[in-house]
Length: 343
Image (tube, rainbow, N blue to C red):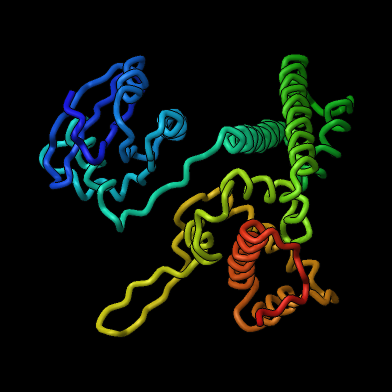
């Protein structure tokens, strides 16, 4: 293999990998198709070289492995490599495009997750999936009950309070088969709630064992779920130069379409991690609901904004502030000060 490449693009998949190397002039000097078991041995025999991988499933694992071999691996979002694909789409052209993007100084990269981040992210994703399954089960039982003339009030707590008395009432009009089926569904719902409690306990333990998470809990609108989700997303706050960069990464800044010297700003971009953005916005809504009478400077600002622009705009704006505050606390090791004012 020719090892004169100044940058390597690696197109990854489950079993077939394609590596393409470019020299300092941008010319492709070698390309090779690798099996999954061949990747690490091949790169172990290469001198240290910048490597680009498209951010996708498994990319963080391979980035950590290749970094361990002494290479400088960067993950690139798919939208930043697509522009460099020439010809038809295939693995070799994709790898060449990744190498081209990796060689560009203006390319923006995705931070490589640590193993601890992967653990937290998996816990959050499993919990979120279980929440969706619980919601679907509640809706399913509601729909079945409706077919037998029973309508429950809005809200899970009211639904659970009325479900058991209805099932045990002799005049519910349910046959033995219907009653058995509904009881089985309730048993499944109980199991999901028990598992959710275990996940929540794990999040509590993760919060208690991390000093950064404990500091984040002092911020209004940030609880154990949002604090641990922030740490799962931002292991090293220095990956972002300033708080606005983190907020922009989460899609909480205005979308811009300016031309001819005239600036046009619209709603938020909604880019990046939808899950964390949703948590921050819901946390901001909760903080707004309980903000009356509090002396927190950020909450007073958000209440005045809500009076002028409405609760929805104020909640999103407060979420934007929360992301920036979280970055400052993580990047500089600060504690939250409710009445902090910049010099």
